[in-house]
Length: 109
Image (cartoon, rainbow, N blue to C red):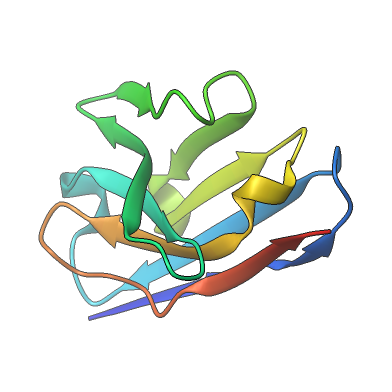
């Protein structure tokens, strides 16, 4: 089982990034998907999820971030727009069967 994230990096405030998370080793399409982040010195914060086809967002990212999935590619995405300095964090993908990716750093500065 593996979840491999990509797409993080350094971006200016107001910019955009798209994170990807490629899954392998399990039936990806059968599980809910989630993005979680952890800012420096802070606890983990839930960002967004897709559960049974419905999307959910934290208030802090609603209207700016879009979570999506492509089951044919076993990949989930997080499109992040209008980024703010407070979005700086390590972003993790996770699935409903308890697996997490290794994390990808997003720095907004």
